Image (cartoon, rainbow, N blue to C red):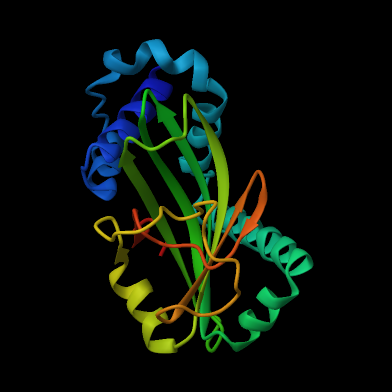
Length: 221
């Protein structure tokens, strides 16, 4: 129960505008403020909290955690390619890609989430393991939570390298949140990236990265 309350505190803190990375770091050190404020909502989102707890937890060794993230990425890519042939063609043209497994929770109009994944260079096959965070107020997710998988293709090697070296902060960008149902369905690069989001309604393509932040995982690289 304590872990579930801590995780909810993370999600609410991110949604309120705090840095996803700094909040997660604090929680990793045992900080669990605001737990009582969200305790009453845990029964409605319990399954998602359990799922998110599993996602952010590490295996017995960093190598096993990396293997888990690699396996999830491979499964996600194979599903994308089997369900969208144009995505495979764009993948073959890309300089690199990143795949994230994410969990999102919405509580009384406050929505936030966390994800983990791996970025891979198609040129050198170098792997960088990364985290992502999302957050927003007044989002129409209702009371509950859901899982999503995110695939980002990078058109140029320089942009991909900036992504893995410096991370990417789109929390201040305007536009639809990633995976918005109104996203354009044309498979193409936009500003050097192409974002695919797997939802419970299927794949959304050319989605926006607005409202998300990405950074390298110091424990896995």
